[in-house]
Length: 148
Image (cartoon, rainbow, N blue to C red; front, side, top):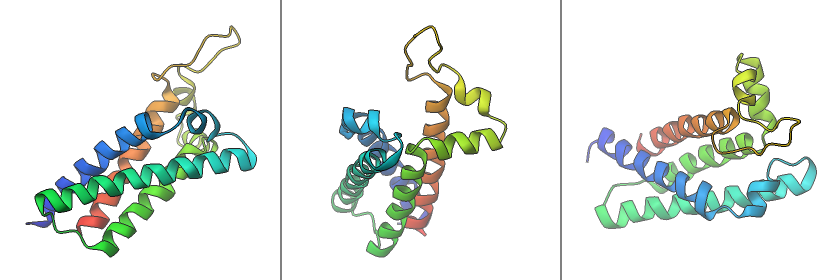
């Protein structure tokens, strides 16, 4: 199997695992608490990242054992480490907000956020879009690490 084919298969597996882990596996408590300051936020975020990484590992194992995609365990570990660390950083919220501000995307980050009128946020916020695109970029890097 060629390196580009391995990369494509790995990226798809990581992308699907990301969607499942972020939207189905993550608990409500983790989703609501992972960006909170202090240890409660750190612990909730770490628990989310642990289940997220386990979901990615299951997806890669399925790829390996059903399609016989050649995966080096050390490269898988390195790629999943890249994914886990960057996922934790983004999901703590303040680092991503800081990055958006530095890159001139602060207004976009705030798009759809709650206002003083008490309206409710939705999945269509700028923060969510920046969060997801940040994750996808790092999934690309993780897939490169795993497939190289």
